[in-house]
Each structure stands twice: as C-alpha cells, then as structure tokens.
Length: 113
Picture 1 (spheres, rainbow, N blue to C red):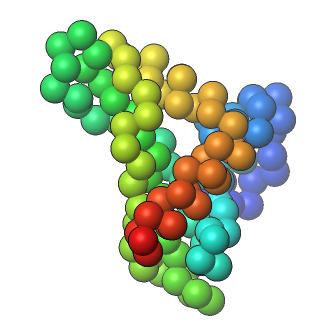
Picture 2: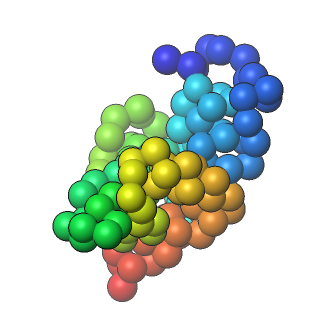
C-alpha cells in the first residue's frame, strides 16, 4: 500500500481523481456532509450498449467512526460512457476532486431524503 510512501508529484495532478491516486498511491478520502469518512474509487462496468459498452462510476467506501472498518458504501450512477475501459478510466480520472466531493455529498443527501 502507498500509506507510507511520499507523494510523487511528477506522476500527475493530485487535484483530479486519477492524478491523486497516481501521486499518492491511494484513493482520495473525504469527510461527507454526514460527518463520516469516505474513500473514492473509480469503477467500470458493462453498459449493455453496443456503441458505448463501458461505463464509469464512483464507488465510495464509508468508514466507521474511530475505526478503520467498512460500514457501508455509496455508488454514483454511470458518469462516463465510452468504447474502452482505458478511455472511460482516463475521462473519469480527469474529474476534479471538488466534483468528486460534490457527487459524494449529493449521494449522502439522497440517501437520507
């Protein structure tokens, strides 16, 4: 794990989802509007669409208060569609972390609505 590795800023822009992972060798973490900690992962899946067969979405792991145990998760809808996994990962990886956080907070609000 990259937990104890120093950041390598030559590997990308850590203001984006993919860049953060490349620079820090771990997913970014956020405090949600519910006060809980979440880490963000980029995931891909089949869409069932022959023209755009790969979809990318965000998967947020919810961590327990005071302990590093998984308490749940949230998933976005498919945010990016493309012809290949690499293309979808690149496009979603370019998402600014501020947008990732906005999506997390929106998912938290919808969960409690």
